[in-house]
Length: 240
Image 1 (cartoon, helix red, strand yellow):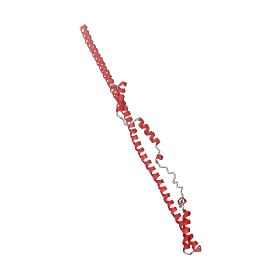
Image 2: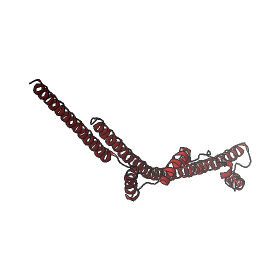
Image 3: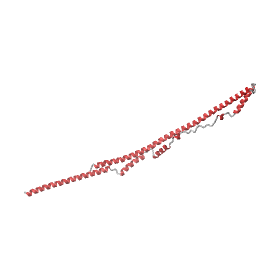
Image 4: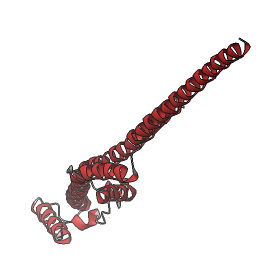
């Protein structure tokens, strides 16, 4: 009987060991299968999340291609010209010059050229009148003649002074009108230049806006690439 009991126990132990071995092999196989599945899943995620340098360059080329053909009004040259125009702008260029009113005539320039002749004629007429009145060349006649000559001389000088003032006023008006006309012309040129400067500023701004938009799109594409890589890297790390 003893040998039979031992044989039975041995058989039972062998069965237990065999079962454990089978279970261990199964567990090992399952773990390996799971690890393999994780590796395969990770590899797929890695492939999906990886934007190759060539693919990224194609995206950048597409962005540049769009901006190169969108018909932007402004150019780099416009921006340079606008900068130069601002640097060269001088308000003094639009102020009329005033060199001072230079009037060189005097009232003597307006004295009647026949002054002496007129005075002589006046004296002769007064003498003739006095003689006709029987005053001769007495004191009374002399005083009347002197008075008449002085009055005539004063009349001629007053006329000359009036003509002098009129001529000076007319010359001054011509001078101020010339300055006013010059200033009006400069004002028109300044307004035209400022209008042109404004238009050129718009072109320059359009150029810079386009450049900024292009750079923003490129940076956004790069950031999307980095974000996608980071997201997939996190997902891959979770598989291990």
